[in-house]
Image 1 (tube, rainbow, N blue to C red):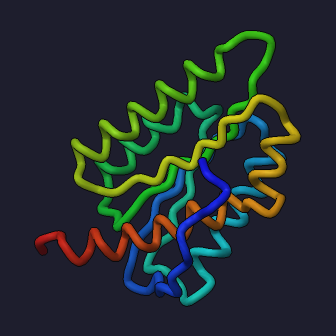
Image 2 (cartoon, helix red, strand yellow):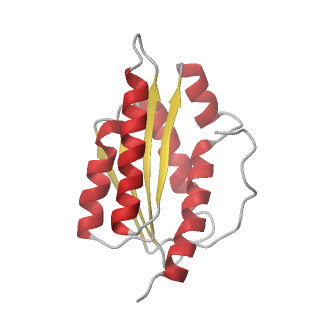
Image 3 (tube, helix red, strand yellow):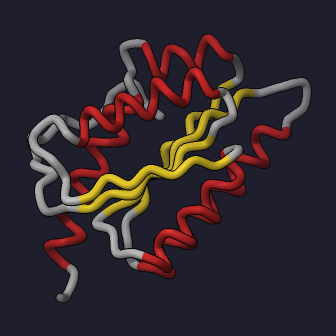
Length: 157
């Protein structure tokens, strides 16, 4: 991701429903990311629904998104995870697999899903993207608000 995000819109979440799936792996960073997403989504009003589910890791995010999409209607969903490189390149597999599965769900269900999985080579870089100036949580929430409005605009009722 670039360090030059799109300009923000002051969109209201009122009348919109959001589902968030957050991994527990790298829990301290995830909690901060989830807090930033939640507070941004509620900044300009209260959404009709903000449903949060937890899963063990980023690889499980698409499964939970799929279960939720089969059970409820959402304006937009967000998958949140933090994948940090370890001794092997396993983090690439997890991130790519989860990202592809999320895109597949978007095509299958017709609901926007924000891929909020932060992938880095080290913990300091992850911390900078979540708690530093980059604030990916806010970016993910802003994208979700914009896509939720677009979804509701173009979805037949």
